[in-house]
Image (tube, rainbow, N blue to C red; front, side, top):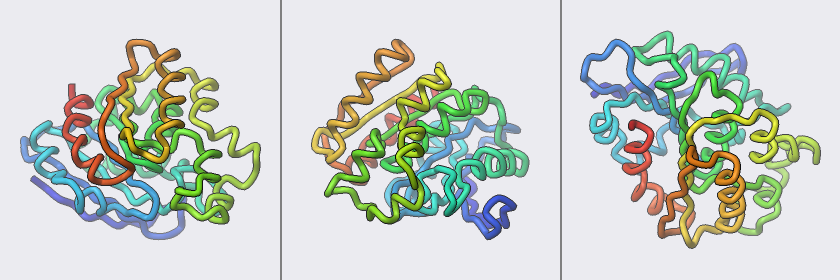
Length: 242
């Protein structure tokens, strides 16, 4: 198993950017890959700190790429053009440097919380790059997240990213989906005690209706925490690797 802690200067962000990458030792020329996104206040090491990613990468023979999210909600803003960087620079750079396939059918994206939102957004906007999406306790409604007293993100921080009502509306997952009508396979889970449970159930109803058999809801016990996510990531990676 190869563990890479990378740092490179990015033309989009005009600074150095960190990504943690795990690659199995099975010797493939082009591995299938999971782009694994973290939540608010976390970084590229958070998945490794909470889950045995190396063991799971070996079990499912997957490369796992864990980029830092910079609290940017995986979105372009005046603060940071994160979405454009991810799609136009990070993905092709990693795929060009390492034995990782650039085919859509070999690339999957998953994330928790803010990263679950990012997985849905990046995935739905890029069906030519990503074929499967797994959203774990995602921020399913960004306006409700902004105004939820249990939200960990200060309102002024949220407003630096989504700086107008129009931008909030445009970046709602349902509106992104309605604009592009992607047909990828989606796995969606949320704990029964999660503070965003109601928003996720509303998103579940929407995606079930739109995606039909390409959508899978995975009911789980737990709250909005790593206890819940670490207990279910094995099943998520198993689904992605099928």
